[in-house]
Image (cartoon, rainbow over all chains, first blue to last red; front, side):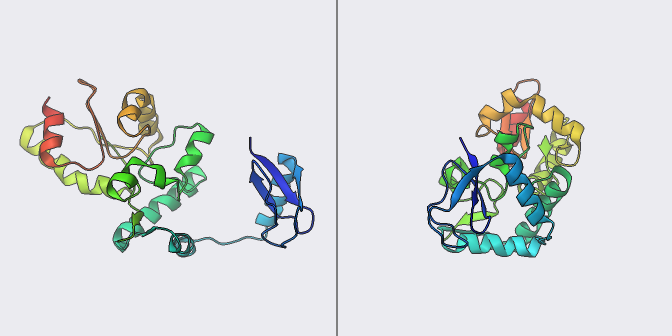
Length: 142
Length: 87
């Protein structure tokens, strides 16, 4: 079961089954202590108050960087990418998270987290068979 | 047909659907699911029938024949769509 963890040096928050051995921010070893969800939410909400803009261009840059060291890339078809980003951002505006524009949420939150872009598309039938995530935002590098 | 406004597969399939309606006179309801909550709820109500045939998920486009319960997900050729509609 996933839990919340806080670095006692720099207050990084980690959500996972285990805490990181080394804090990726301050590099301190064995620095994480388990905390309550309420504490984690408060810290993250406060950090959010600093307002980090994440518009489409920044998101595109982030997924391009994410793809860089992987076997896939962002689809070179920019018209398709633009359409998909519109959908992803409309879903975030209307439904709170960057849900895939080509699938529908079930209203089971844990299940629907699997639809947040980028999703774990490497496990999907469409990626294995056709080299594309379902919506086509990511394609296997040629 | 359940479709989504920003889904490229749906955009590609739309001319084939229109052709099918025009050439065969079949009735296909086009229900957009990300910007219409009623349509989304309707699609979710068919989850038990649709999802097993679509990788366990509710994907767009989904062609659901309410008379035969036949389901197609994603982009297919015209002949496949026609067969689905005329069954």
